Image 1 (tube, rainbow, N blue to C red):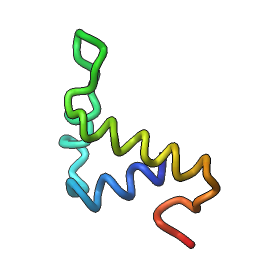
Image 2 (image 1 turned 135 degrees about the horizontal axis):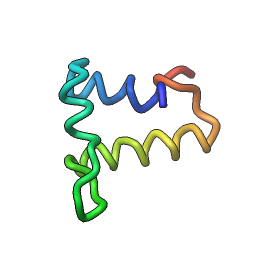
Image 3 (image 1 turned 60 degrees about the horizontal axis):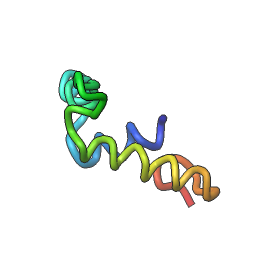
Length: 57
């Protein structure tokens, strides 16, 4: 989660209201902002591959 939040803040800013709005789930089950979902999946993939959170080496 920290990896996602770090990268999200770099891309979209550190505004909590924007984060909550972009990651809300719509009635159809999809996220409000598809890019935020893609960011989440990218973070999960990075961490599962052994990367350190927040772009650490």
